[in-house]
Image (cartoon, rainbow over all chains, first blue to last red):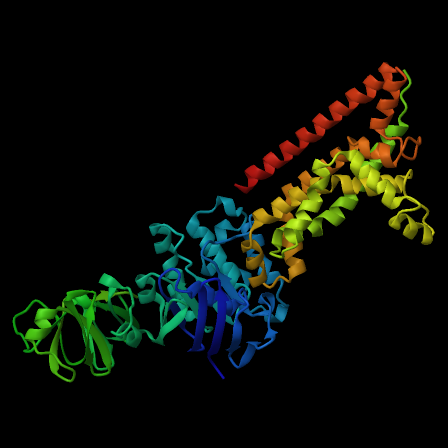
Length: 356
Length: 224
């Protein structure tokens, strides 16, 4: 049975975690929430670093159930902490070998050279951790984690302790992981950007509870969640390149129910492309307008509406075929257009960000 | 001038055996104190620190009572055929271990506390068992603490006087350590002998502490 079944109950002072989740057996699941929402505690429960009540089944194998509790060092996990936490008394090579050496030879599915090459840390092997930059340290920590050939990879805000440049340095490696990893990755973050780049499945956390758990696009399009995204409110679509317009350097990204013209970043026809459509870049119109600079005009149906923070603003979810989008309008516009669920509408998308 | 080396050798032997014993006893005690949230933590820490504030004579007096032929521990050792400990080398080791316990436990406890949970958690996620984590992560990272603990235990044992006098007496080759020998020389107005041993002690103490500070200074720099 593929997938992860988890139920955790944990009380720590006036904080309590109470979560019951079914998560996909591969791809990236992001635990998203503000600090204090319990997302890190939840991740630590998966690792066995917190002794929560409940149960945990990974790929049909029970790691925890009632009194049975597999200790951390017996769980086939890897954990990347917020700070790289390299062992200062070991060289980079010593750090990489620490977990690797402790596996039986037949359990080693990731080779040392492979991991070193993957994260581009070959030139660093002989150095001590004190002579690495923040980004280099985190790359070593990720390689060290992968070298334990885990069946479940856990990452706790691996970018948040890094400066802007180091973030930009690590993110491509995480995207590479996302594309090629055959094991599930559980990833904690409070950054909407990292959600957009990495998530396949999104779990929204607040006050120790999981408010929502579902596929990325659908979960981002939910209007009933207090997701504190602000200007980042919007959806991320997983699409495929259907054609490329070489003259104007555009690519048509096709998703279930429609397609969007986006900047051509060199992905071949048929390749996967991830695009992000922010609510503030989506406007609605009752008629099809000719003679506009807007490239992406799509037919949709209104599905739901919700207030958003300020009384002047409304969020509207529309659906293009099977795919949802979220638009931010003024309450007056929403009133003037007489929007209601089921109403056909034209969607104008001012800009689309290509993420990957 | 003739120098009697016997007290010097005896002192070094006592300090070595005591330090070794303290490392074996002090490490688990310090580890437990550093990592527990048990209510017994503070009471035990206070007991360990007692020798810091008590006059050595108080300690020596009660050890004498406890270990003597009429004391509970003394009766036990006698019934086991070990005889009684006071006025023997074994008794000196026992007293020295208790007297220097805080000098071993406190640096170790501080070093273990400074580690924090993180390195051990990282090691656990990298498949290291609890014992493996202690040996491969805690011990190397707490190395300055071990060094300080060993050096202070050794030096403190070399320098003790009151406890030795109470429980060891002044038996040449058995319990007559350096500090007692110096006291003897002064009592008998052999100032020349007293000078040699005393000056030697000062030089020794300085060199030991200098070596410790230099070693820990280097470790500190390497970790940065």
